[in-house]
Image 1: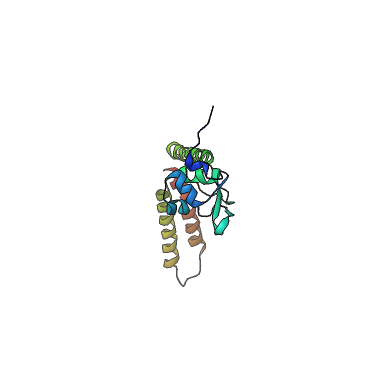
Image 2: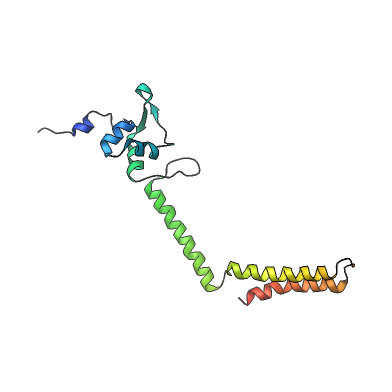
Length: 153
């Protein structure tokens, strides 16, 4: 029983491959492979060739990869897990809005803007005058009304 090997693969050390060998194996352009492998650790080979670990390089070429905070390559399974977590957080946020636990940002901002405008008007009307107890009471009354206005949303 004889085994036949692919003549392209036969010439390569399959543990470490350079860009030219990866291009031959995958049928992709060398420039494309070089762009995808930017930032991936490599071993210097003959004539200053960059030799990449084949398992990592082929996964990045075919599946793609991103980098996490510590610079390690994220596998497709990890990326899928992170996407599932992000979707769950998005659904939870949408449910909070639907239940009324979270107010729309624009409404909250408009209520705060109106209250601050009222306070600014009160202060401008008393410009150059000492702050009276009545003015301070009016300012605090305006601030206390904000939560009541928010609960009506």
